[in-house]
Amino acid sequence: MSMQEAYEKKLQSKLDEWNAEIDKLKAKADSVEADAQLEYNKQIEELRAMQDEAGKKLDELKGASDDAWEDLKAGIDRAWDSLSSSIKSATSRFS
Image (cartoon, rainbow, N blue to C red; front, side):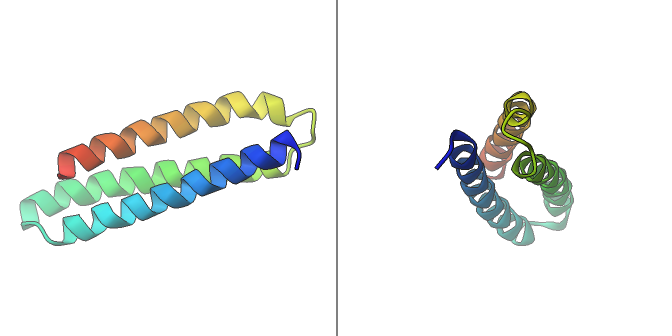
């Protein structure tokens, strides 16, 4: 397995993990009062948008040549860090 393939698998695994976390947040949001639910749903929509963007970057990476993937890696790492921080923040607020 090449470094690129290993990196792609790692990212896909993390994306799947975040999807599960967002689903848990959605379940929590569905069980709170209406006022809080609006705020939770807004946050969840933002997380889904970030997750979609991260998924698009992963797809870009999968289609990249061996030479280009290193260039894409920096942007992907930033998107991943941002999404990770946002999910952690939302999880702590929803607790």
